[in-house]
Image 1 (cartoon, helix red, strand yellow):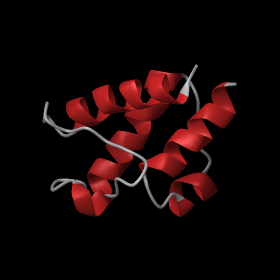
Image 2 (cartoon, rainbow, N blue to C red; image 1 turned 60 degrees about the vertical axis):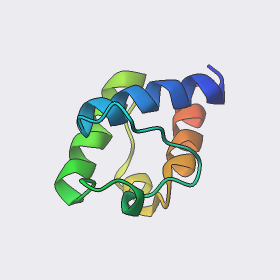
Image 3 (cartoon, rainbow, N blue to C red; image 1 turned 180 degrees about the vertical axis):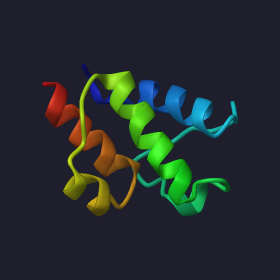
Image 4 (tube, one colour; image 1 turned 90 degrees about the horizontal axis):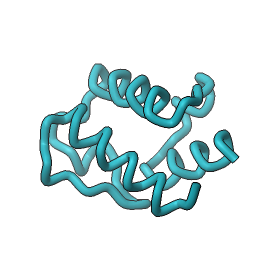
Length: 80
């Protein structure tokens, strides 16, 4: 899977979780960029991403991700 395919999948998940078809994430996107991205929605987002890509983040990964680009890096690492 390419990085572009990962971002396409992540965009689907973000749009579904935040119920906003206008969301397009990139490497630099953070919770500050999406209005409803709070701690509860972060959990929902992580679960939805794990389900979409058929993988699991460990707690260290979840707590240290600083942006969507880092999330994509971890996904690519786990699914390849």
